[in-house]
Length: 276
Image 1 (cartoon, helix red, strand yellow):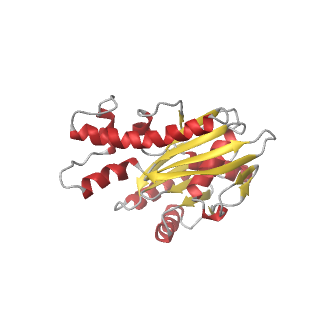
Image 2 (spheres, one colour):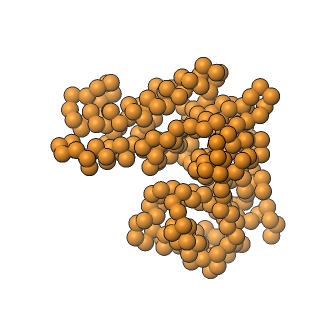
Image 3 (cartoon, one colour):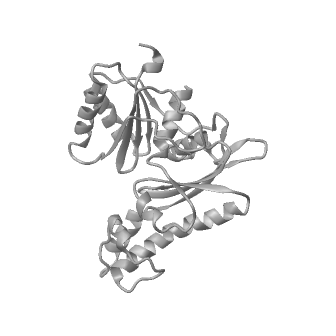
C-alpha cells in the first residue's frame, strides 16, 4: 500500500477534552475559500474521565480494522502526563505505538510567519488552528475565535505582497470558567451551566439573577470579539471564524458575521500532515 493511502489520526489534546479525527489518507482537500472537514470520523472525550481513553482505544482499533498502522499528528496543551497516557492509548489500540508527530509552535509554517515575540511560547493549539484556517483562506485577514476552556482570539493578516503573519491575539477565561468562578466565589449567586446560556433573555440585561449571569458572561465574551473585529475592520475586510466546544453558546451573542467550524486545530494538523 502506498504512503498516500496510509490512514491519518489527528489528535488535539486540550485542557479538558481530547478531540480526534480519523482520515483515510493525508491527501489535502482543495483550497476553495471555505473550511472543509476532511475526515471520515471524529469525536471527543474528557480525558480525565474514568475509562475514556480505554474506550477511545477500542474506537480507534475498530476504525483501523485490518488496515495499515496510521500516521498520528498531535497537539497537546495539557502536559506530559496526558501525553504519556495517549501513547499508552495508541499502543492499546494498535498493538504498538505508531509513528507520532508531536507538533510544536515554530517561527513559520509555509507562507505563514509567527509574529509572536517568542514564537515557541505561542500555544501550539493557537498556532496550528491558525495554520488550518490560513491554509484554506489564504487571502483573507482572519479573526479566529476558539471558545474552549479559555477563549482565544487570534489574528492572521495578509499583506498586499501576499505575505501572511500570525499577529498575536487575546486570551480570556472561557465561558464555563466565567460562569463557574461566579458560583464558586460568591455566597448567593447560583451555578449556571454553559448549556443554560441559550435560555437567557435576548435583551441587553435581565430581570432575574440566573439570566443576568448568563447574559453578563456572554456579553463579556462577545464584547472582546466585537471590539477586536472593529479594530481589524479599520484596516480592511476581515473574516471571523468561530470554533471550540462553547462555540454554539457564543454564536448566539455575537453581533458580527462569522463562520463556524468543528475544530480548526484538527484542520491545521491535517494541512500539516498533507504537506509533510
